[in-house]
Structures are given as C-alpha cells and as structure tokens.
Length: 324
Image (tube, rainbow, N blue to C red; front, side, top):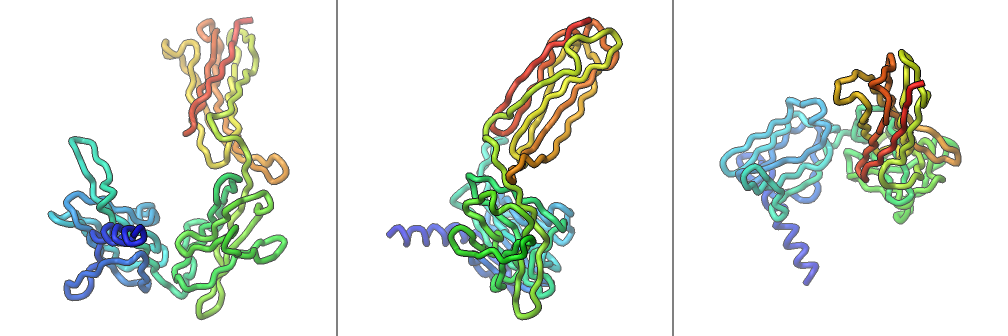
C-alpha cells in the first residue's frame, strides 16, 4: 500500500510540469530526459504564480537563450540552442502568497533532470579547470564530474600514485546526476583525482579535483584577539587582530566595537582568509580581521571588541589598549 501511495504522490507532483512537443502536443515528464545538444526545449508549469529552478550556469552568464514568461494559467520556460553545459535539474513549483509573504506549495511541484548529450563533451563543462572538494568525516563528499550521456561508463582515478579508485557501490558510488559520492570520507582519500568517461568512442578526461581532508569542530567560530601593544603612546599606530580557525568551506563575518566609534573616529578594517595544512592531511581555514588605528589619541583608549559570526553562531572576544 505504501509503495502505491508513493507512486501516486510522485505522479501527482510531476503532473504540473509538461514538455511542449511538435504540433502543440504535450508530454508529462519522467524523472530524467535525454535530448541531443543543440535542440531547443519548451517546458510549461501549470499555475498563476510559478517559480522555476534550473542549472545555475544559465544565471551566471545571464544567458539570453533562456526565457521565462508567466501567463494566466501557466508559466513557460524556453531554452534555445541547448549545450552540454545546460545539463541538470529543471523544476517548478507553485507559490502560495498571503500579503508580502510567500511559501512553496509542496503538493504542487514538478521536476525533471535533462541530459543534453554531446559526443564531444561527455562531461558537463565547468568554468574552471581545477576544483577543491572538502572531505568532512561526518558527511558524504561529492566529486561533481557529471556526464551528459547517462549511459557513459565513468571511472574515478587518482593522479599520484596513478591508480583507479574502485567504485564498490557502498563507500564509493557513481550517480550520473551528481558525480562520485564518497560516503565515508577519510584522510586516505585526499589528493588529486580526475574522472574518465567512455561512450562509443575515445575516452574523455574530466577536470582535476583536489580533495582536502577537514577535521575541525563544528559550532560558533573559535576566535582569538591580539593587539600590537596593550599600551600605546600618542600618535602611535595600533593593530588589533581577530583570528578564527575553522572549516575550509565555512565563511566567517567580522564586526567591531571600539572606543570613539560613536564619535565617528575613523579606523581601517581589513578581512582576509587562507587555507593552511596542519599536517596528516588536515586542512583548516584561517580567517582574520585587522583593525588599524592611526595616530593614537586619548579617544582611542579602552576596549576593542571583535564579534566573529558563522552559520552556527557567534563568538565575542575583547582586549584593552591603554595610554603609555
């Protein structure tokens, strides 16, 4: 019974999304669709307030090949002169709005993954030639070498030592829509890897991926604060440095409170970060914010407070600067 219910709900969710065929015919879309690159496609999504999601590549370049129009009873998405890079998920859903607030109607959605096949481009092209993949011990990692032809045979290879990494279907899985998934990353996986694809012709090689192993505690930033001198003379230059060690892919935002702030005392702040290797294959991101006071005055005496914030929370650290 459960199986039947899930099939019924799946069909229901797909029902608002259709493909416009020749001579005005419509076709409900399956979970995946394969089209030859170069073709144009028109999708329609039933509803008077529709939101679309499509490969971010099309937004990055504000691609004129893509057009979306909302009409009375449906929304229309047209993609002209498709390319291998357009491969990805195309989905739509209805928005339920009350005043200025809108939310997604989870019962009225449609989704399909479209492969735009191209013999010359077996891998979905990316704007870079080299990507970093972070390996966290507590979550799967994805090496995103997606293909344009779902039937292509894809293998994963380590650059040094040169070897093929076995796809065992348990710890290492290949998904044509995602790439290779490492279910339980360890420091043994770190290094440079690439993918190889074969489909009725010469094999093709993907870009290279640098796998970096991460092992730092999750949570609010781990912040420290230091000052160039806790006792400064008049006209001295004073640096206050706030430092955070954290996960490589987690951004840190800094803000400051300092003497003379309310009086409009001018200070200079500069933020930057870099990756550091802490040995045994562990990689950490070091983020810094530097506050510079030039021509130290009486108004600058007091507490300097740094607030470091990430998605997990915030940490406040402080130090004092006195007059010599």
